[in-house]
Structures are given as structure tokens and as C-alpha cells.
Length: 461
View 1: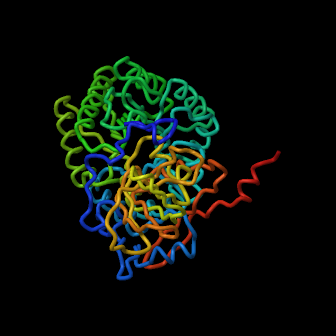
View 2: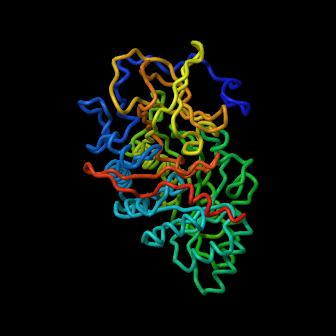
View 3: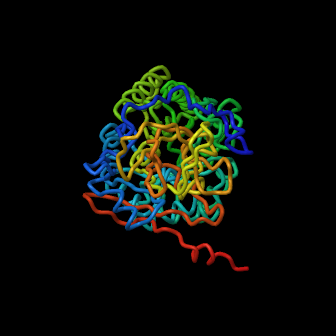
């Protein structure tokens, strides 16, 4: 189903809710897989994160606000680090990046991948060791590549022949030999939304495997000898729950490894299978654990290497959403409640598509709960919407909230750590919300709220 540009009432959306959504027995209950691990509902009925009430958060920081459970994020880093102890785990910074998060993932022993000069600047300013940074992007500028070389970035994932030439010239000028991976488009379309499936042939990323471009890119790098080709990279999509896509991808990439060995006598020592591991946004989602992922991916790689008579390369993965997504929820205040003549109840909050564009952009599904109190009212099917001048400004398409939800209540939406603040905008000139990190009952501001002065400061007219 896709949202209609004319608004929600024109969309192919069942007014009675999706088939998977069930009326809850207890509208106050929290499904643990959706929430940061320290979130509870206290004796007063309000949610608390790491022992801090959301009422106190709203009083101190206002709403909307992104609330990050620091212990939860760190524990998810450790879960991946424990599941992949001999591999490199790159946190995918595009999911959400700020200096505080860079420091957290660095302290937990993870690597970091970035895809723009701005992300690289954030990583370096927070003290991320450059040798633990991987630099992605399909159109890296000369300035961006130069900065990466000068900083000593550990891996540059090359994405086009133009970039190979550009990077080769810069490396010659500096007398350095950067380590690179070739991004391979393997022709696998993961079970995900069309706009976030990144390995099929008709898209902007990487070198085509089927057309021979990937092999030619590897041969070009090896023959010129300026860049150090360490291996191949593949990323097949996002919000993936099925390992079969990784199996096909690994088989095809390792077949290319064997082709390179046979043609040039070189066995590339590294393989990056990317990320895209799914998380639970609603009750319909059943994500794998890092331990399950590690077991499946190792089995796939070991099997395919044996089939090609290749030494098993050093493996890398790139979880972003799977680390930060569940560690954050967004806290809103209800402004109006509108019963649309029995069709649906619209609960309007003080944020919307400017702080979470994913529902409108990807037709993404989210959950929500009444956060400031418990309720004894019956569940009602509601739609949580924002304050923007768009009928498609929807935060949560379908969710059961208490029938007595009212203006001034706080509503929390879990699973908003990935791609919400990163993709936030100033649509309708709404300042972007802050991000706070909560740990041991204490909250600290890690990204401040934008102000109207910030908006006007850029307006030089």
C-alpha cells in the first residue's frame, strides 16, 4: 500500500486498520520488543526510561523530543560485538549520527561508516579513530575524498569509475595508498520497500555484477596499483528479516572473488555484506537476534568459500537501524482529538512529518502508547497525525489508544532512533526537535532543539 499525494483519505489504507493489528486486552501494556529495554510504566501510570518519568522529560525539554536510552544503545552495540567477535561491525551512521553517539559506539568497540563530508566531519570531531571509519557514497566530491585521505580513513568504498580515477589522482598527489572496497550491485532485491532496496540493477549504487562493471573496476584498481584493493562490498537493502537475500548476495560476490583470483592471481582478504537488518516497529515484525544473524552469515560465507575454493575473507557488517532504532522513542503532546463521524479518531500531536517522514515517504508502520498516564477506558482505533499543512502528515497510521485520550496527554512512539532525526526537516518552518540521552535516571541534551532564531539566521533576504 502507498500513501496518496492528495492525502490520507485518498490512500489505499483500510479505515478499520490492517489485518495484523489486534485489539489489545490491556491498552496500557507495553510490548517489550518495541521499546528501549529500560522503559517501564510506573505506579502512577506514566512511562519512565532508565527511571526517569516522561512527565519530567516533557517539563524540562519540551515536546516533541527524541529520547535515547543510552544503556540500551550501548547494550545493542555489545550484542553485535559479542556475536561478531572476530569481524568488523560498522555502525551505519546515516541511521542517526551526532558526536555523543559517535563516542558511544567508539567506546563500545564498533567501527563507523559515513557517506558524506558532514558525517565524516562529525565522526572526526567526536574523536572516532579514522582507521575505524568506512566512507561510502555514490558521488563523493574531490574535497570529500581529499579530506578522507588526509584524515587516514580506514576504508573507502568506491562506487564508480569516475571515483576510482578521482581517488587515484588524489592518492598520487599525496603519495598515499588508501585501502578500498568495490561496491558490487549483485542483482538481489531484498524483501523491502522499493525505495530502500539497493542491490537490484536499476539503481544508482555500485558496479553492476551482471554487466561486468564490478570485475572491470577490480581489475582497474589492481592493474594501476595506486589504490589497495582489500575486497568487495554488497548491500542488498533495509529492514530485512529474511537471510536468503544475503545467501544469494554472498554467493555472487564470492564468485566474483574467485574470478578475480583466477584472472589476476589475487585473493581479496575482505568481504563486507552491508547491513539492513530489520527491527520491530509493530507487532507484525519479528527481527533476528545478532547471534542468529552471525550464525547464518558465517554459514553462508563458509559454504560459498568452500564451493569456490577460497580462503574465508575477513567479514564486515553494517548495522545502523538495528542498533539505534529500538533505543529511541519520540515523545509528543496531544493538541486536538477529532472523531471523524465514526470512521476514525484523529489524535493530533505537536510534531509530525518534519520529525518522522518515514510514514509518508515509505508507508512505514509505527506503534504508539499513551505515555503520561494509564487509562481504564476502552481501546479505540486511532490515527496519530502531525501539525503540518498536509493531509498525508501521518505519524502512526493505525493504533489502539484509550478512548479518553485528550489534549495535554503525552503520546510516545517507539522505534524512532533510525532515520527520523536524520531525515528531519523544517517543513512549514517548524524547528527540529532535540535529542536527549537518558542514563541512570539522568537526562542530558545531546542535540539541542532548533529555534526560530536558527531558522531566521539562514535567511539572508
